[in-house]
Length: 121
Image (cartoon, rainbow, N blue to C red; front, side, top):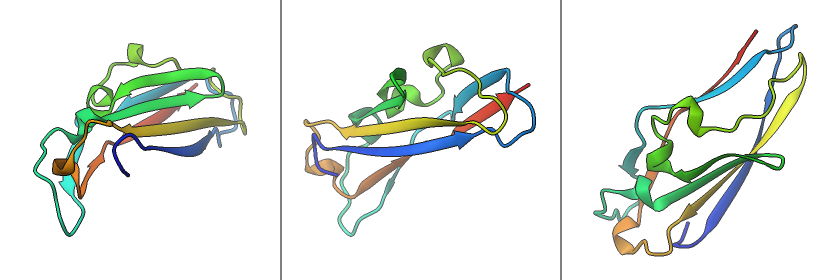
């Protein structure tokens, strides 16, 4: 990924249960973790703040902000689609953009942030 570049990844989440979900939540991990991944690794310490994340589901923007602000975000930060019926899939798209201001000090770095998706009934 180069500065200003956006990578978009589609995913689907399916209610494999036998009953309709009444709730559908997204809970991000508490921290966005930055690690080295290349043969040449930059010295920047704020990669998560330089990654803009937009999560959409259809026409709904679920979240828009940095990976740093996504980490530990409360449920109110998300606009979730309706909880799906049994057997129904929900499409999502993740668009991640590296800030155009990111210089060579970000070379060879990677970030990770666990996301937990939960259906309740």
